[in-house]
Each structure stands twice: as structure tokens, then as C-alpha cells.
Image (tube, rainbow, N blue to C red; front, side):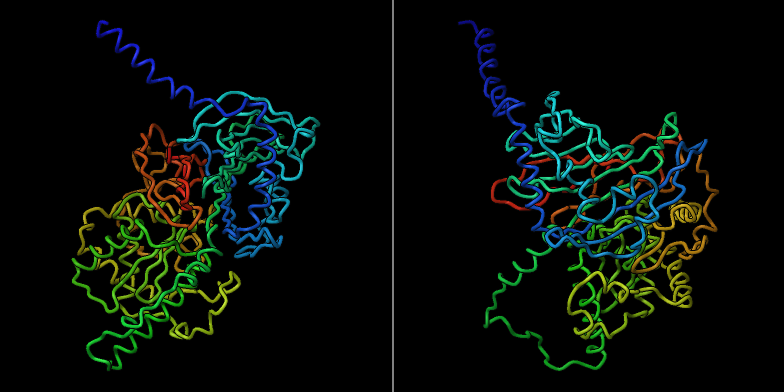
Length: 536
């Protein structure tokens, strides 16, 4: 047989398994009963979990140069306990009362209201109430999905209308996109264990039904869930504790310590107690790659300024959206929202130089946290205890030393962007107060003026928001994504987009999600990371 026909036959045969494996196990219409059953099963499964839930919402208004910009914002953070039909609330309990339109009804932190964002009609999704029409198959990340159009058989305002994406192995819904009236949601679930798909991120919009000609949304919101392992992680740590009596000894060469060493250890103990409790609350992410990058920036500042502190300065990250930094003795916390918005590494260095200055100046944490009775039971109700703000005098001292540290660092020739970032924050501060208001530490702007390294803004170029080449702040979700299972942070590896006009900059704005879906390997329970419109 000639070589060419043989190759053609071999190639044809090689594609047979691929074509066969791409077919669903049953016809799309035959899978509907399993889809409905899985959605009901999820409502029971999720009762075993108690994740953190965060929503950040922006009201939008038209702008001639920028398209639409935020005019108002709201923030909510809480922990949902589905099993007990209750939630722990943090910050503004009146958020729902102040939300406009459909958000008031559908994003109430109650089992009924919140369920609308993470379930397809939790109480009524079945063949009796809905028509499901198979459209086509398509991939979401690595997951082959069946796409169904969903419509209610009887028009009711509490019925869902839109589309669902169903993975083709166990027929679990992995995404649903549609509306309840003017309230639109795009809800994603991630495979956090074999056969377990749990709600992870939700993008929401509400349009003005009285102005159908309006092209932009009236409200936009991002909702993130993380910390599904909250209960299991602590119980497993306890069950896995093993102690080797031969090694469980203090190996220090000298059993005695000086009073100064003891005092430093006491301060570190106070820091450790706070960090541990914030971790248990889901407000500090597990150590990972993002912490290492922030730590590298601090190390660069320390080395070039010959700063040596004992105990050493360490950096941790918070998975929350508000832009803030907190210095807890020799521990520096930065929020995910801050890392998302910063335009470059020099801007991060500017923020960290101020925080490092607090540590170098000995602005220590309240040492009473070294007593364990203060934080026995971790609860969000304890958060008022965690107030790591400094006095105005300490802030002025840290600003002065921070500028010296920065001027003697590898970043000294790239300080225009940090200054412009601060100018942008104060420009938008009255429109997005919830975004720029710190919860645990320092706000970079306060009362519509720069309260953090203001000298950088004074020496920066003029702010030109309508200039597409001047990038002063990035959209939320640009740099960091969150692991819904454990809350670990990882960097978004998307290529920087090309900016064609000022409308493309989207500084500090909420944008949709587009996580890359993958299926967990058998026997592993470790969440894929998900976030951001850029993570494609």
C-alpha cells in the first residue's frame, strides 16, 4: 500500500476515540432529570459548608470621556451558615436597605434572597415549572458543557430566565446566566472536589427598566465565595497532630534570654495570635505565591536601606476587596483589592515603604493580644477588636521615613505612577468610599485628601483620566484571583490588554468574571483558582 493512503487511514483511525469520547453519555433531553436532581442535591450538600461571602457593588453613571463610571458604591462581607439558616455579618448590616431596585430583593443575605444568586430557582427548578431546550455543546475552560435555554412555563417575577451550562459527566450545572426581571446574574461554580461543583463567583447587573435605551448598567456587582474548607481544615489539623518526644524540645543553645529578647518574643506572640485568628476568620489568605512577591518588594527596600529588624518583617495578604494596608508590629497586611488596582511594582513599593517605616520606628501592636483570652472563639463579631490604625503623629513619622526609604531604593526613578495612583484614589474617593475605606488598617485616602505618602502625589504629573496612555489604576480583579476552597491567592496570568481609548481603562471598576474551569482529579480536594474578566 502506498505511504500516503496509509497515513490517511491512520489519521482517520486516530480521531475515532476522540470523536466517541466527545459524545455525552445520554441525549441532552434525557439528561434533564439528572440536571434537576443534581441541583436539588447541591442545596443539601452546601449545608455542610460555611464560606465567606463578599459583595462589592457600584452604581454607574454616564461619562462623556470614560463611558460609564462609578457614582456610588456599597460593600458587604459575611459568613453564610446554610445549615442553620443564619449568617454572620460584618461591616454594614444595612447594605440591603440602601441597595436600589432588584438588588434589595435578590441580594438579601437570607437563605431565600442570597440563594437566587447561587441556585437556579432553589425551590422551583423542575420540569413542571420550566422548559429546558438544548442549544449546543461548548467548552468552558477544559470542561465540555451542554448549553440549555431555560424559560418559565408561567411568567412570574421570581422565576429564572436565561441559560445553563451543564458539564457532560455527572450533569451538574457549572454556570447559569440570565435574569429575574431586571436583575441579571452570571453565576459560576468550580469543581472543588470529585463530582462537587460549588458556587464561587457571581457577576450581577441591574438595568433601568424605565430607560430601555440606556446602554450601560445602572448597578454592577461582584460576589466572591471562599473558605469552603473552613470547618474541615481546623478539625483535620487537630487530628493530624503528632509529637515526637525526642524532638519536642527547645533546641536553643542558651536557655536564658535577655529582657529585650523576651519583650520582642512577647510582641511576636501578640502578632501571631492576631494572624492566626484572622486566618481562622477567612480574612487572611493562606501563605502562597502572592505573599512571596510582596515579601520580595519589602526585601528590596530593606537591603538597599540596610534595614535589619528583629523579628524580621513578614508580609501576608487579605482576600478582601477594600484598598488597604495594615501594619501589625513587624507584620504587614495588604488587601487583594490594593494589589489588583496598583498600576505597577513601584506603586506597591511606595505603599510598602510606608508600612516598613512603621515597623522600623517601633510602632508596635497592642501587646495585650499576647494573652489568649482576648481571642478564644473566632467570630466576625470580634473584628472591632482588630483596629490597627496609627495616630496622626505616627503616620507623619512613617511618611517621612517612608519617603527616605523609597528615595534610596531600586524604585526611586519610577515614582510618577505611585503618585498618579494616589491622585486617582482621591479623585474617585467620594464616588467609591467603600472601596477606599480600610477595615483593619490604614486608608490611603481619607476625607477626600491623600493621607498616605502625600509627597508622591505632589511631585507626580497631572492626572489625565481621558488619556488612554496614562494608566493610573487597574480594574478590580486585574492581578489576583482567589481559590474558593481555601482562600489562597494566586496571580492572574493574562496578557496586558491593548488600550484603544479612555473607555478601556476601567480604573477601579467592577467587571465580569470568566474563570477557566477544570475538573479535579480523583481523590483530590483542592480548589482551582477563579477570578476576573482577564483570566481567560
